[in-house]
Image (cartoon, rainbow, N blue to C red; front, top):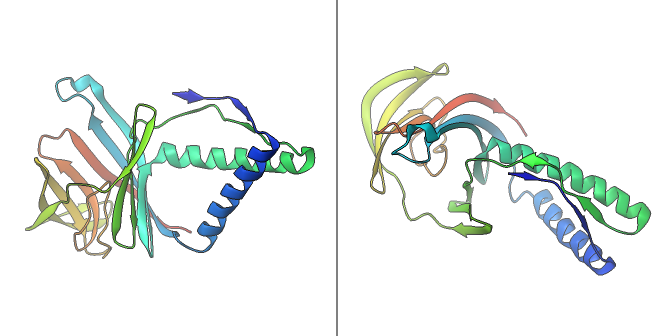
Length: 215
């Protein structure tokens, strides 16, 4: 879906909007969430398990910080950056004209919609159903069984783990070389970062393609 429209605010709406945006900015500056490790994963998933032609491939990012993590489609990461630039331009114009006009960028949305936010041990999933947005705590949590088997992924020695996530069985490969109990989506809790995870039907896969330290 592409978005692209102009939104004009009244004087009162402009003041209220700037106040809300400024409050959010200050919260970010206080360090409620700050990432220092950026992991990029390739998502390969089938929307309809009865139709293999519905498989799609998309990139996703896992940002890991001292207080938590955020996993989302890389396209959402890009869209947020573009919208931030558009908001900054609108604020600059508002300071000179006295009116706030936001031009919504024309940019494609992500296929993979859910975002998983971990903050001080609390896990929240943000998702959209039609035009409504929801935040909820996940019902399922993966229970792991460590397996004495290893393989190399992206230059890292990984160990195998089998997990049960709801009614789905998954196989994960994690690395003790990166001793962070993190992973893509809601797959967490192993002794190291999860570099690859598949369900046993091979309908869904998350595979690490890059890892970098980044603020």
